[in-house]
Length: 362
Image 1 (cartoon, rainbow, N blue to C red):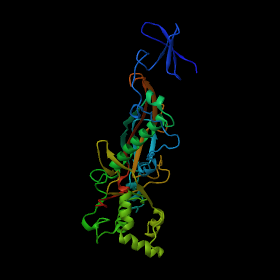
Image 2 (tube, one colour):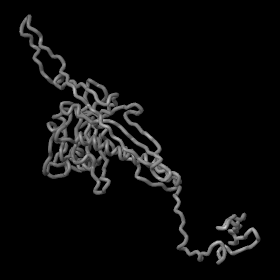
Image 3 (cartoon, rainbow, N blue to C red):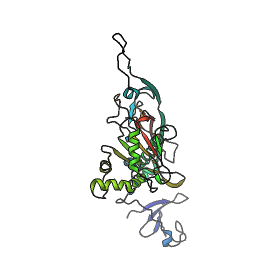
């Protein structure tokens, strides 16, 4: 074993033999390194003096994953990627579909009644949103099998998804303004988990009869969906249709209770404040019934109840942009900043094609 060359305060060189714990000067003088008069003096080691460094296991890395499979806002309010952050959009009035105009001709020379299309316009204005995460250079240097940058990206995506979902729910479950004229409020024992007057199937039939377009999607929280499945009237319909009380997929349940072709969309996402507290369901206690036509993009023949306008800014991909940069002032060795940004707005483009059931769960 090669000795280690050390120098004392006077500059004299000493050869340190780690195996024999001795030091030898250039003049041949040999000294016990641990004895008085050696390089230093110390007491014998005890177990309390030993502090092993905890290493990261290579065969177990655990986490809570992502929440992307819990998102339903983009299903209920289909995004439309736009090239302008704010612009006007045209709506073909429902009067063009439903107004009954008398086409009788009063005489040989009487003028024909005019039925020109009624158009209206509204303006959307996308709002900027974004979050940033920081990855310390020190953390990256210490990492063994965990990828700090990937963990930071997952955290960033999860937080962004919660905010997007809550923005969508705020509009889709708005019984005060957006759907004030297109809602049913359940009270007392009429609530789906409330008692004898509860009849979810009748509530959904009423919603379908009230909306001016066909209801295609019904959105609710997982908790409210469980209320629906356990409701005696829903079970009665399901048992009558199939001769069994086994619950299957939502589309099967829909067909059994007379809602063939309607998609139940179940919101599983929950959130809590950074300060702590109980978990809260993003989709709350209400149920939203919507018209979401297939290929709900720029289709003037059909209108979705709610639309998400998402601005495709330069450098974005489908309205989303990820930016990265180094911050030399963050941390001992600097840090890497990663930002996720978008600009969007959720708008009710056809509120009369929807119906909101307020307080289905109590």
